[in-house]
Length: 400
Image (tube, rainbow, N blue to C red; front, side, top):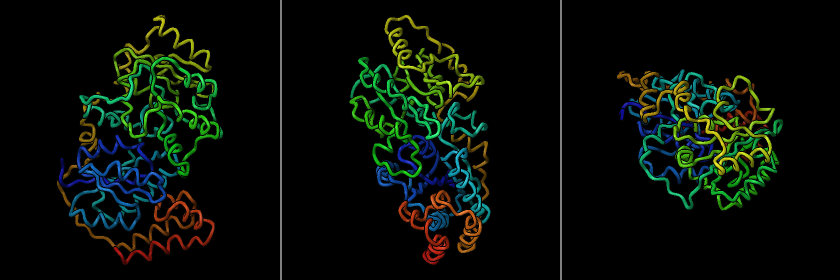
């Protein structure tokens, strides 16, 4: 474990990135800066409170600068879990690269993302070698999966968008069928769906109204796994059948396992992509009748297995996971050099630069990224005087 390196992570979700954070914490210290507007803030603090290598802070520019000065010549890497396919991730990247310009000890701002091949959030072709998603799973592979009840079928519905409501979760007939399924099964929701279940006020919650209705129905199922069950790979390993959306990381993650699993993938005409090279491993369905037929044929032992050589396909996209992915990434990104930088910077100058950079394009998403306010305050500030946003940053400068 390197003593001259630490990771800083701005944290905007609930348990969605728990496995990723644990993977990086296995390598060196991680400082989590949890956004004040994050409705899962207290749950996240509680979840990570017993991890020795994970240090918890409320997010603000002041706090980040303060923690940088306390690193005692350690190099700092900012890890961004938000996808740069979306505006929030793009603005985050701009913000922390401003800090990097002024602070030599910040040696990298790295958008690590949070997903794998096949997911619409995956924007990082250069990460398709290191399967960081698997690091924590591999490191704890020998630990037993603790279940309240056994299951053979794992159901992992994703979600869609208001303008394109085509997810498995949007299909009422399929949801009703799965809720009455007699075969042993477990349901693992998308992390955003759990956020809706536990607090409907997350600013980035984009479930359609139909999906919200269906999440509420699924939450009544005794087969729903709890949100703290974050190791989805362990669940996939245990299952024989995985039911999921095409536009998701789940299908590809399943292809890692070489024990002849069955992948039932919901692929509507809207999702169809003739360039999708995963399809030969799937049994696809679009209607509840097609899904019923697949399940019936499986239990009648009449269904062909299409994943026999899936692990080889996985290795065409990523290296074989071995639990050392963070160390490999550190080598590739040259995070482990021995030189040390003096920590010296003008806090007020940095704050002024941030103000100059974002003042002309102030929007709610910019305010969420800057992180100095709660959700209620952001609403109030956006519809009042824009200058008040940056005034509050300057007022706190002397407290550092």
